[in-house]
Length: 165
Ligand code: FES
Picture 1 (cartoon, helix red, strand yellow):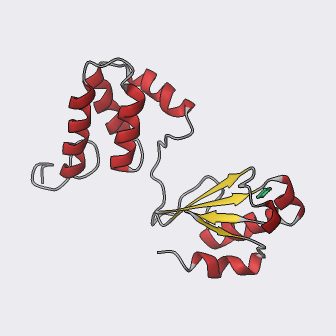
Picture 2 (picture 1 turned 90 degrees about the vertical axis):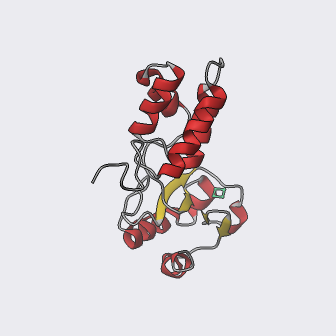
């Protein structure tokens, strides 16, 4: 079946996403300094920057893909791999470290069956470590999306993860 017969486009997403990306590219075409805002909008549409999206952006803005990869890997806001629907950020800062943050990270890795930096195959969770999330009084701490969970024990991890779809 051709891509036209499915709802897929050459950028690996849906036709709707492709149309949205094309609108963004048309809006910025020929403008100086357009790359970062275009990448931000493209990531907003697709959730991450696939190789296909980067190629399309390069073609439309007449920028070599190597240069786009350089920008996308320099800024931590950009993601080159799919991310989970829920982002788990587990603190490994000093206050959390002395209160057992390593064991919390190990419990997360065990429960999710991924390592820090990874995403579950069902794209439900991405697990990241952070240096301090400013809630040291609740150490050890993690965040799932915008929710803060503190005074954690490894035993509490399965119950916390179960709250998220
Ligand atoms: S060190 Fe963990 S919240 Fe500050």
